Image (cartoon, rainbow, N blue to C red):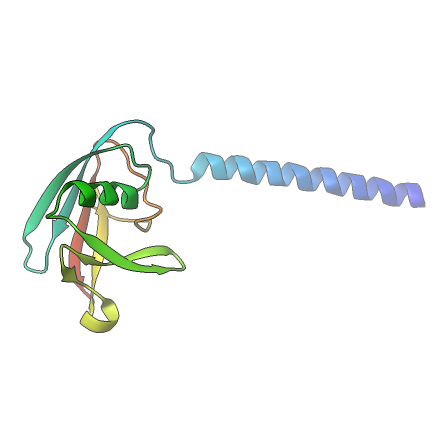
Length: 140
């Protein structure tokens, strides 16, 4: 009886190890990734009047926040700030224009190559040739 119980425990441990390895493999395959090396990207800012300013950025940054930090260090006409939260940095001010939903009923929306962003600024991978657009939007 004891031998049978030991077999069940060993088989359960093996099955658990296989499932953990499978989940790790799937996470590695399907999680957001950036490309290594020098990247040429565009960061665009569209203000509340629809005026657009584009910044060409050459960066080795892995994530958008780091590329934006690089841009802010190199170009005095670009600045941003925000508030850290449970999902990373929430961008609230770009180039001096505040968009805080609780105060203004507005927010800075992130678009990647024209598509609504799926990640926050701290998790958004930077890929060579991509355009990252911050648009001032009023909540409906």
